Image (cartoon, rainbow, N blue to C red; front, side, top):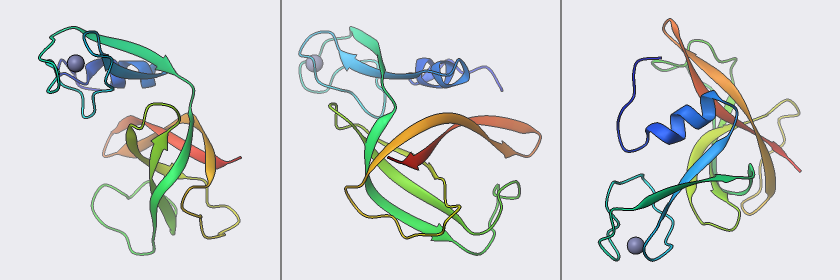
Length: 132
Ligand SMILES: [Zn+2]
């Protein structure tokens, strides 16, 4: 991957190491997403990166049947989801295992693992979610 020194760098570095790291304000304790360098609620510039279990519920989903840019490495169809991470409310975009092609249910419990999405010549760390 290219060097990543943005506010969300610890997130991407965490995924690359197999861990889900999410930012929380060191002042008021609010979870901060997208990652920022200053809390919008209390103004603190102390951001703590906390490792979270990869457990979540499905907030929304879509199954893609037609290829579009940067999806060349994925078998069609594939399911993209927005997952609400347990106990912090942060919502992350990811993929859902779709082997059985059963429609996901909003609010369904899911567990994640780190995979990769090939984009051009790069492998981007990706959370791949499964039911249960
Ligand atoms: Zn704060």
